[in-house]
Amino acid sequence: MSDLEVALVRLDAELPPPAYAHPGDAGADLRTTVDVTLKPGERALVPTGIAMALPQGYVGLVHPRSGLAAKHGLSIVNAPGTVDAGYRGEVKVALINLDPVEAIELRRGDRIAQLVIQRVEQARFVEVSELPESVRGAGGYGSTGGFSDR
Ligand SMILES: O=c1ccn([C@H]2C[C@H](O)[C@@H](COP(=O)(O)OP(=O)(O)OP(=O)(O)O)O2)c(=O)[nH]1
Ligand SMILES: [Mg+2]
Image (cartoon, rainbow, N blue to C red; front, side):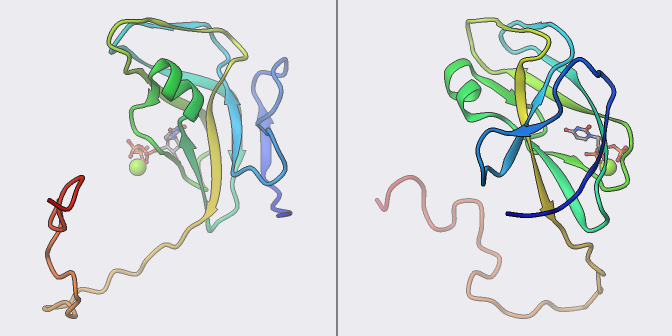
């Protein structure tokens, strides 16, 4: 088990802090501090009531929760959202209702997303005139085929 400490401020002291549902889970659940109803296709920037100081060399990634996505079509517009180590503001989630028919009603305290904290590199970009060869080369965007091998 990792022992990474992350300084956390609860801007809304009545709600519990982010928590991992099980030992070993990658994502800690984030809660909405507000009631919000999303009509089909509608999006909203939802506050979570927390602010953090991630250590340098780490990033917080805000991912959708798979159950809410599969059952209700709740997703995140910019999934996964990027929380920079230097960010000290409130973590917010840009939710979107992808269901074509049903509205989604969220209540204050509901677990709406999950925060995955990972190590990250900051690159030193070195400009060159030619890139080294590779097997893939410039092939992309379906160059290996689609769903099947037909
Ligand atoms: O899901 C998210 C994504 C971002 N942020 C916060 C933390 C992050 O450090 C900051 C900026 O995010 P990003 O760089 O993705 O957005 P931007 O549109 O490039 O804004 P900026 O110009 O402030 O970098 O917004 C969140 O609270 N939740
Ligand atoms: Mg940015």
